[in-house]
Image (cartoon, rainbow, N blue to C red; front, side):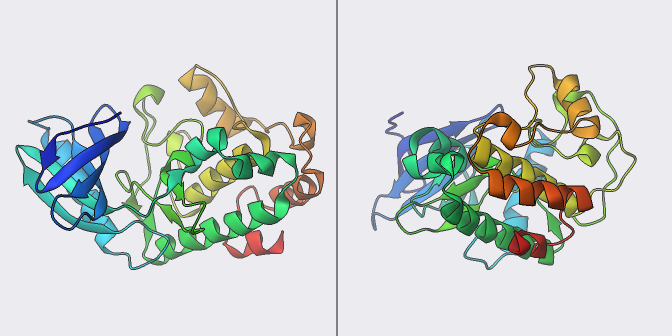
Length: 272
């Protein structure tokens, strides 16, 4: 979607994403022509909670000095819109690339070498996030961005992140749970009486890898409560059971899964 509006010396070129509360644009600085990503709150008069969450995301991202986490330059209030200015490194989300990129689609056809390179890189980045005692809480293909030309990969969107071991969720209506339901960990549902820790991100990353290898998440339903129950109580169909060619990797993944439902550390991904 082409745009023409300018904010704070940045000319918007393309709308990338829209949610209930935020808008994300690609933009260009009007003087030096630097490409950036603008993320802004949609409402002119956002709630105190929305502003607090937006500031939390900004302050969390400032903690990181990692090539695998998108850089945030600054936050501004421009024309009554709260706005973050982020780096644009030319990547696309894995969610989009699964639909448009033959290379990413080849993971479902047995291209394990490239998949494993990507998977290990993402796991390392997630480890760097956890070293700062931050849990992302919304790892999914839309929040992992990959530049096919430079091979750079970065994790984005820390809007619901939290500090390690500070949160034990209570059960909520599944329609208002934090996170993305196809990828949410059992403890994030609030039905496990268990504190969220770094393993919640690895669970969501495992779901993401499953989708990269099979073309679909392990549990599919239009009913939020059904998805919550599935993450807590059901076993996904095996990779082989879906007729995917990645039999060797599937056997290794399932062997690890039997030893530990979620990897206890990044090192398990190096064993595969």
